[in-house]
Picture: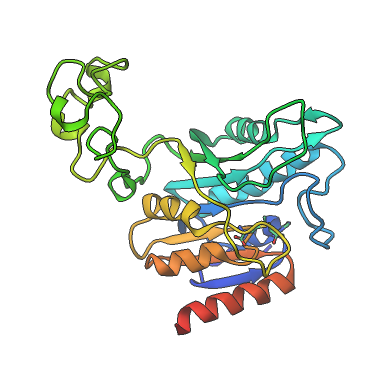
Length: 291
Ligand SMILES: C[S@@+](CC[C@H](N)C(=O)[O-])C[C@H]1O[C@@H](n2cnc3c(N)ncnc32)[C@H](O)[C@@H]1O
C-alpha cells in the first residue's frame, strides 16, 4: 500500500472523489476546512461516486461521516471544520438533515462548537401556505480538539449599544449606568462580561461575532449549483487560519473557497469530482490571479 505524501501541493485542485483523494493527502497539513457538500436528494452532479444521491438519508449521513473522518486526519490538531448544510422536505416531512449530520459527526469524534444560522435575506419566495418559508441554512463549526485556532478579533462585529441608530437602552449615554447595556440588562451578571471587565465586554474592535449571519445569496450564475457567497465564508477563513494558512474544500464546486482564500492571503486545496467544475474553478482562479 502506498503511503500518503508528506507535502501538500498548495493552491491546487484535485479532480476525483474526495473520499478517495483525502486518503492520499498528508496528515495534519491544513488549518481549516470550509465546505458545502451536495445536499441530500437535491441535484444530480452526474457522477457515480457523487454524494447526495443515496437511497436514504441514513446512507447519505454515513457517506459524509466517512469523508469527514478522513478529512479530520488531514486537518491539523488545532484545526477547524466549517460545514454548510441545508435541509430538505420529503413528502411533507422536514428531514432535519443538517442536525442529523452534525450529531453523527459528533458521534464520530468531532467536537461541535457552534451552530451558526445562515439567514438568506433574498431567499427564493415559496408557495407554501401551511408553514413558514425557509430562509436559512446552517454553518456548523467543529474542532478536532478542545483547544483550537480561532481568531475572534478578526471577525468581530459592531457593538449595537454604541451605534448611532441603536435602539438599545439609549446608546452611549447610558454606558456605565446600571442596566444601561445589553450585558447589564436582561442578560446581566458577571458571567456575560468576560471576567467582568468593561474593556473586554466593549472590545475596541467590536463585539464577539454572533451565531446568526445574514448574508444574501450571491449572483454567480456560471455554475448549475449554489455557490458560496464570498461574504459567508470570509469569517470562516479569517477566524480559522492565520495569514498564509491553508484552507481545504473537499467539495470545491466552482472554487469560491479558493477565490476567497487567495483574496485573504491564504492558500487553498480543492477537491472536486466533476471535471467540468474543475475547469470552471480553474478559470475563476486564473481570473483572480491575473487581475
Ligand atoms: C454545493 S456544490 C459546492 C459549491 C462550492 N461551495 C462553490 O462555492 O462553488 C457541491 C460539489 O460537490 C461535488 N461532489 C459531489 N460528490 C463529490 C465527491 N464524492 N467528491 C468530490 N466532490 C463531490 C459536486 O460535483 C459539486 O460541485
